[in-house]
Image (cartoon, rainbow, N blue to C red; front, side):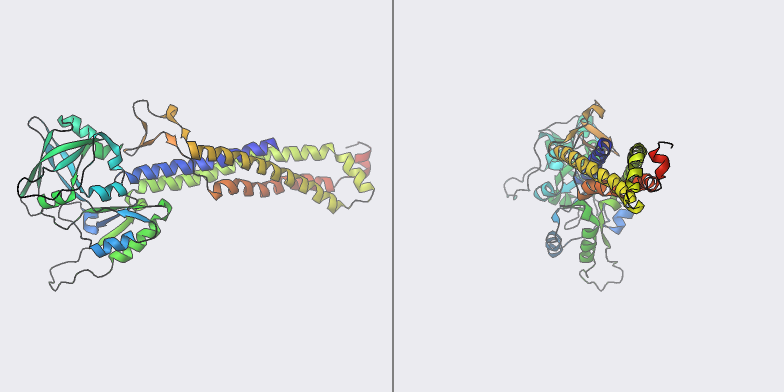
Length: 413
């Protein structure tokens, strides 16, 4: 029974660990910048360009926010250009965001290493317009040699073909753990960037945060239905309506989705392997127990116990032992998994000493893994042991029911 308990406990703990590990990976990959769901135009997906934009009306935004499971949506503007100072410059991805909405949608604002996050654009006065602010990725800041309080010159080609340029004041340096953002990212207020880029009222992407990542595909379908509603009609035959798509994180980063699917398959293989070992030990124990009590079984048959009753007695004995071991193992494994769900499991000893955690596909995630205890991680190991105990008890039960009374009593076999 001890072997069964240890095996089931190990399975419960491991399944909860994999749930937490994959959940942390998905969360880190999507929450920093992408969102669990993202809206963009089909043209921008096929060919990212400053001109491939889409619009979202206030009615559509509010309708999306009202969907069950949606936390927030924050449309963005993204352009590519040069940023620098008198001495150095570099190619950068300039991202225009609504500071307040984006803080509720992504975790970029929580990744500030030095300084502070962007503030909403203040109302401009006739006396002195406020200087636009910017938050820069820490690798990019080090490359061009800027820090909080320095000025940053921005150059790019606007949507109308004119040269967009602006002088920005660096208010924050961020370390997000996302390689692309840390090396090329420059965040600024969306309204300011839209004005410079001649993109008033237009967006390139709209990240959406949801409560449960497992519902991403279902909610993305609901958002797609909203986006398919007729837009402002035009009689100009040359104007092609913008096709807007809502994609779940699995479509945006299919590599992560494939990893989740591979992990699910690996869990089943792991389950089979562990239960094979449990079954081998259980079968051997049940067989040896039946052999040692062969004379006892012969005596029972001699006094009139039906062979069928002896068969079920031996079989049920094995099943009961399996159930008791599974109960103990489930309680042990679930208790340990719950502890790691609450306090986390420190894997820093396996992480790269030069970083704060693990890195996968350019995204860093914490070395502290918080387990996710689900009904499947608790009950699947328990339920799966029942057929294992039944199968392992069949052969000893059959052999016991076939006991030859005279030979067994006389110890001749």
